[in-house]
Image (cartoon, rainbow, N blue to C red):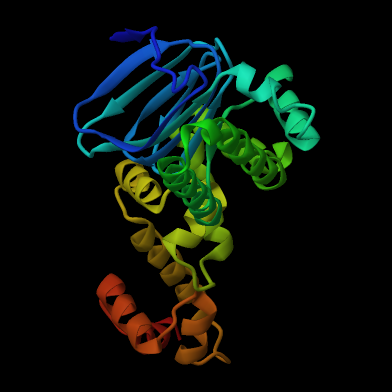
Length: 289
């Protein structure tokens, strides 16, 4: 395991790496001065902070306080792609009087003991931050160096404004972080409950993933590993079980049952039912009589 101590600060103020790619496994722990913002574009692994272990996946945002020990382990392949911003406290302090809102946002993060510092972003929030990181990268590439130390605090102002209003909501994130830190069993249970509540509606794995703040690929892989079925297969099983019960209602047509059970097309429902039970819904109903 690598222990990182020295950081090559830009102008002794900040460090910014945009979408840097690692093609070999990453494993180290360290602590450093300055605030750290880490965003995972691609890659999987785990992150350890405050004696809690969190899974790493795309669209993960991590905030680290100055001199806070943290550890990261990333598996490769797939490639590990991340954006990293570290800012010395002196940069922030120099703008505290000019940007009072930034002062308030940073004080909340730096001085309060947060129950979590790892966030699994929705597609909308991930897209917002990725756009902001790209804009910072392009701006720093073209402005003279004497202006760069002002660009970074302005980025922080925008970052924490969005973070405080859209991401850091203890009530909204409590369940998500509990699932992330307590292992896969509870997450699978939560997914099953979610399907049981929504199986009769038209939804995608992306819809589910955004609600749980995990990537669709991560949820799909974890569910398949734990349940032996894909999310779609399990959902269709739940829909078929509901359809079997509804077939006892003589007033409902096969088309109505198809819709009530969550299938978009009667023809698909009939084909799935026959494949699962060896007969059409109409034949099954006749046998019940």
